[in-house]
Image 1 (tube, rainbow over the protein chains, first blue to last red):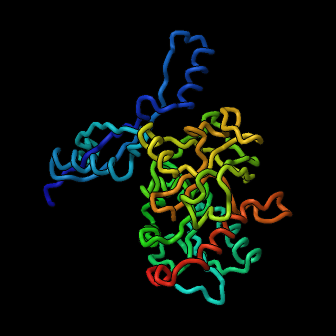
Image 2: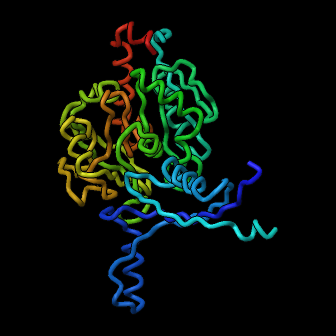
Image 3: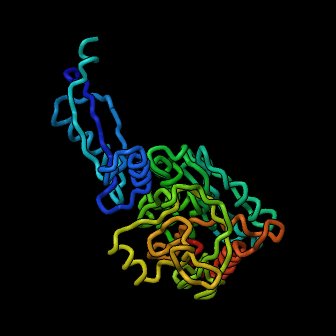
Length: 93
Length: 248
């Protein structure tokens, strides 16, 4: 594993379409009351930044997919998407 | 496990942030004279109980999602094995959330539709109690009971196919209603799909419900309907064939 690279994943967890989102609705109402009258939909979600090691991008993708499946998103109500990049800060240090 | 001198023994799982374990233990020991063992979440065994309780609270701070971290606690492997062997398991409030995250019950529990934490007495209609003989065997189909609710994330959600399947199989056993037993939007305290307050697994031994039966077990606290779930369990344990006891 001496060749493993440090990666940074940004995982977005969102409510599935059609799942009621009272928090998003409340934020939408607040935005409209501030004068942003064209706001018609707000959906709440989570952003997780995860630093981890993997040998290559394919291995990193597999790991993040597994993290999402096992813990980060509940498939009953949520979907997950992510971007993975080499961790530049870790590479520089 | 054979009942020792007729005293049921319950294991109450305790996670960091659980808050209802002592209420369950109090009802079991002080009100009913049973034995209750608090089992810390890092334990890998339950100690041969007759029933298992997953109590309310905020296990592991409810971080990420309610129950999402708790399902990985070592004690849950023992709870799953106990349930698979047919042992009676009840998950109340946070315990219900843990059961759904663990995949022991279908669906999920989400933020209340009004975004408020709701702590109140709630009328519930008992449906198809034979579907959960260990926990509801003493109650009648269509009967109304009163139990406290106390949660911010109790909105039961599942896709329509799952909801249809649960209802067709008689696995929706508690529904939020008004005093007349009507399941209306106004009587639904959290926006749960179809007013669902409690469901059971296919085997009928695992019950998940948002209300708190352990908080309605003495006249002094305003009601005793919760005690009837414990009484049902006691009767069921005594009626259980010896072969089933050995299996556990």
